[in-house]
Image (cartoon, rainbow, N blue to C red; front, side, top):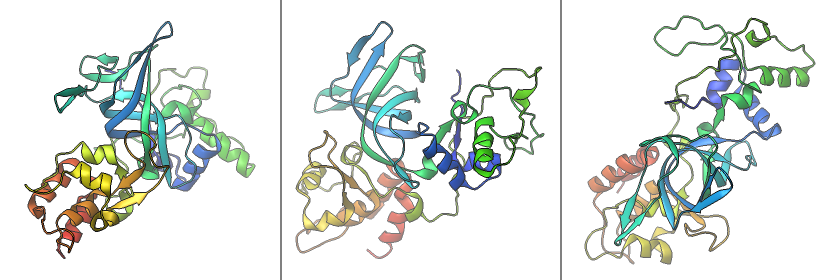
Amino acid sequence: MFKQVFYSVQEAADFLNIPAREVIRYVRTERLPICFIYEGDLFDVVIERPGNDTIRANGKTPFSGTLKSLLPPENDRSLLASAVEIIEVFSQRFRMENGRTFGCRLPTQENHGGPIIPGWRVTGDANFLEVPADEWLIHREDIDGAPTAPAPVVPDDGARGASTSPPKSLVAWQASRSGAPEVPTAADSPTADKTCERLPDDKQGKAATLKQEQKAPIGIPKGQILSVDWPIPPGAPPLQKIIDNLPKWVEEACTKVGRVGKGPDGSHLWNPAILAACLATKTSQKQWTAGKGALTSCLRRSFPDYLEQWEEAAKSL
C-alpha cells in the first residue's frame, strides 16, 4: 500500500535545521493545507465519484485516519478544523447505537483502509475540532513544491536517515525573506531520479518531556466524548443528559466555543480528564461517583493524551 508522506512541524524544522516557528510561519503565509490524525465521528460525509456522481452518508460516520482541513489555521497555536477532506483511512469503521448502524464504506485502495482511490473525493465536517500545532501534518509535496528526487541520505544509526538538503520551496521562501541566494537541491541535477521519496507515516516528533496539560488540546467535541462507553454507575443519569443539561458540578470540564446549535456534535469542547474528575467527585448536587479505576481504564483506552492530567487530578480525590 502506498504510504502518505507527511512531516510534522518539528520534523520539518529538524530537517531544515530552523526553528519550528519558521515552519509554522511558512505554512500560514503560503496558506498550505494542514493534515492531522483523527479518531472519532465525522458528519455530513459526501463521497464524490468520478463523473460528478455523489453519495451522502446518513448521520455520523465513525472514522480513524488522516484528514486535511479545507481552511488554513488562523493562528500559530492551533487549527480549528470544520470542513475536511479524508486523505487516508486506517480502518473501515461502523458502530451500532440503539439498533441503528452508523458509518459507510469509504472508497479506499484496500478493503480494510488505505488512501482514498485516485479520482474519488470524500469530504465531511469535523465540527470545529481543535488541532494543536504539534499535531499538524504537512504533506511532502506541499513543502517541496512538486515531487522531486530523494536527496542523499546519511547512513542511519537505527533511526530514520536524514536528508542532506531541505525541501526546495521552503529554502526559496527563506532566501526571499533574508535576501540570501537559494540553496540548490539534489533535484536541480539533470540526472536526478524523479521518484518521489516515501517516508513512514508514523506520529513521531512530539516532545515526550512536555507536560500533559501543555500537549493535550483544551477539549474535544461532544460527539467524541459520547462515542466512548464511560463507567457511569447504576442510578446515575446518562452522560448524554449530563452534557446536554450542563449542571454546575460539570461546568469546569466544558469550554464554550463556537455557536450554540452548530452541527449535531454541539458547539462546546469537553476535557476528558476534567470530566472524569467531575464524575469521580461527590457534591451537594451529586451524591453518586464513578470509580477511579474504571475512569483510568477509560481514559487510557480512549483518551491517552489526557491520561496524565487525570492521574494527577485523581491523587487529590
